[in-house]
Length: 90
Image (tube, rainbow, N blue to C red):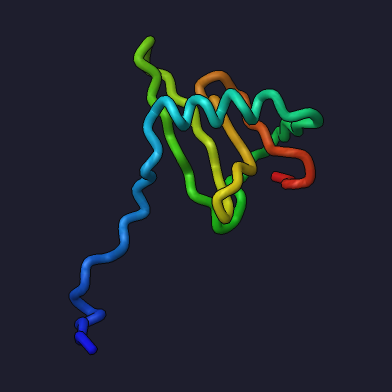
């Protein structure tokens, strides 16, 4: 059994392995889900992972949040658009 010093071991990266195009596809898919909720006050879901896609067309970006590998929310913050999937709350 190999030993590892847990105090000095490299932390596991939280970086997403999804490309910008994949995050944009996921955002587009979320927009097609029936019954989307558009909360006035949005807080990212607890224990969620944030994926960000910066747009080439200008200083804009889109966000998607996933929990356990499933999308639960999305946003276009510079446009004031915040979305949660049905049943996910905000």
